[in-house]
Image (cartoon, rainbow, N blue to C red; front, side):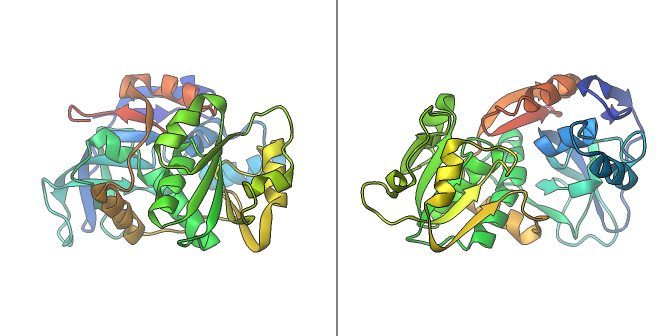
Length: 318
């Protein structure tokens, strides 16, 4: 089978398309013919080994991932495809079923076939979405669910989402609205219309030249924000982000995507399926690339300006 192999840590060009043996499912595995995969920021970090990070971090990362190259050379944590074989102990899935999965550090999605353990984060893909559309949900959707749950977002709250146009932000915005929150969303000037179309009550441009007065963020006399979700991480800041932190209500919560190691499971993926089939969560896809252009996909994601998700089309039905 064809797969994108990370031959060493480095720039996008280290990803090479190679012929490799097709995986063989174990007793508890699904063998999935992959139709689409997502290219995420996390995978660009693994491929490059974050050359700008501090030395201690890079040393620990290499000890965990592999010294000169990833121990798992096939990257990709999100896949969508059809089950073509199952292990003898598999009970919840059947051959021919369309599934999607978040494989975490086991990776393996940048390939024509992948094995996924039945007990891991795998579920039936939304029936109303194509494979490419379904691949745009797990990474941002699972991270968004984790952040919203950690923040305790509930109906009636005033929620501010910083970085609302990326994979995590677009999902967090839609889910928070579905849960009944009043959402103010911040993004760059080119994404204002996109974020409005996803249901944000108020949209702000975080690149605005003049630092906003924190009191002005009360939105014409309304209460301060009950919850703030930082969907881009604490390393990226702006005058608006600083002002939002000052506009957090007493007892409010500020949650960043990089505050802690996120935790989620198969039930969270099932929730995403339910949201999508109800029309409450629609995928946002910026660009699509064939597997042969995986290096170009990584190069684009590294620019950190993508809208929603970048997808690899691997099979004929993406």
